[in-house]
Length: 279
Image (cartoon, rainbow, N blue to C red):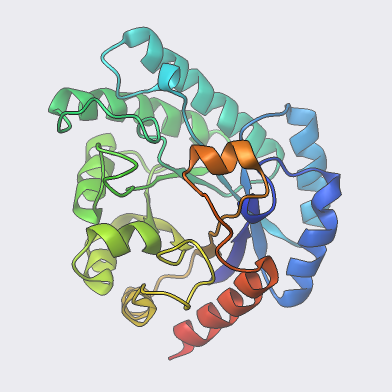
C-alpha cells in the first residue's frame, strides 16, 4: 500500500514553485503525489520526474478529454482527437515517471447527450481505450478510467458499469479506479462495490462526500477500508480534495467554496488511511 496526495488541492499545473509543498508531503509520510496532466511539454515533465525520483516520491496522474476529444462521440474525428490526446497524456506521464493514469477519460467529463448511454458509445470508447492501452504498454503505464457520479457523467457511474468497460477493452494495461466520493453517491455499499471491481482495481481515490477532509463527512470509510483489506489491495490510496485556489479549474468541477484547510486535509487524511488500513 502506498499513500499519495493529489496536487489539485493547490494547483492544476505543478511546477518548481510547488516543490516546497511536495517536500512537506514527503515529511508527513506520503509515498507520492498525483499530477493533473493538462498542459506543458515533455521537458517540463522530465524535470519534474527527475526531482520526484531524487526525493523518492512516486507519481500517479489524472488525465481528461475536452468535448472535441470525446472518445465516446459518434463523431469519428472527435474520437481520433481523443486518442491523440491520450497519447500525449501518456507521453508526458512517462517523462514524469508516472505509474498510473486515472480519471474519467472513457468520455468527456460533465458532457451529456441528455439520453442514457448507448452500446455504440461504449464500443467507440472501448476501441480507443484499447489503442491507448496498447500505446501505454510501451511506457509500462497503467490506465485506470474512473466511474463518475451521475451529475458529472452518464457513461459509467458504478463499479459494475466499470467492470463491463474493462472487460470490453480487454487489455492488460487498462484497469479500473475506485473513488469513495463517487461511490458514496452511486453505490449501495462501499465494501461490496470494491469487491465487484477487485479483479481489475489498479488505483483508489480517498475523497470525502464534500471533497474536504477525508473522515469528516458522510463517506463510510470503515466499509471502504474493509473492502480493500479483504481483497488484499496493495496499490495507491491517493487523497483527492479540491479548493477554489485556481478559479477556472474550480468552476469547471463545480467547486464554489473551500471545504477544509489544506493542512487539515492532508494531515488528517493521511492518518485516516494509516489507521483504516490497520484495523
